[in-house]
Amino acid sequence: MATSAPQDPHARVLMLDEVTARTAFIKCMGRTYTATALGDGRVALADATDITRPLALGTARRVDGDQWDVHTAEGSALLRTGDLLPALSALREAARPSRGQLDGHPAGGHPPARRRQPTPP
Picture 1 (cartoon, rainbow, N blue to C red):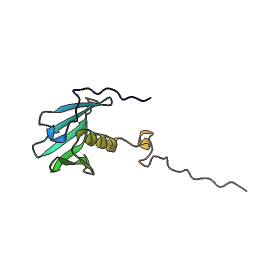
Picture 2: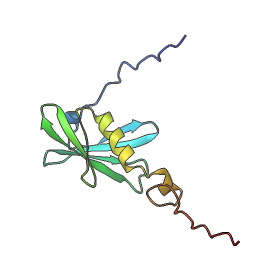
Picture 3: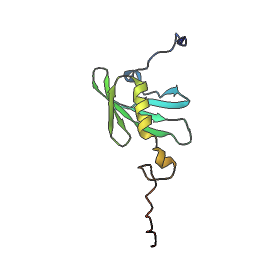
Picture 4: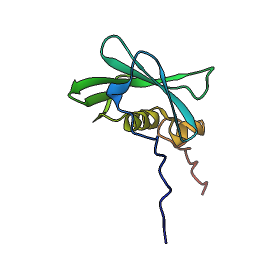
């Protein structure tokens, strides 16, 4: 029989519109993220797990009511949400190198094909 773990009564979902100019630190799945409201209506999101090399993941901009458009640091649109956690998750996934890049291969993930030499007759 499967049972669910008891929920922390103090845990709650953090919404993007709750982020202020004071940097919020969010710990999730062994990583540390930051969220900071910028003066122009955007929220900057970063992975600060390695404090010597924080990684800017992207930004969120309010579009309608409690909905925000989330964009990568390169400007690619990812999703529309009001929750901070899905925004961080999508940005982290977009910033994560592909398996091929981790193996030292081009972005496609596979090493270049080697030319076969014809077999002599």
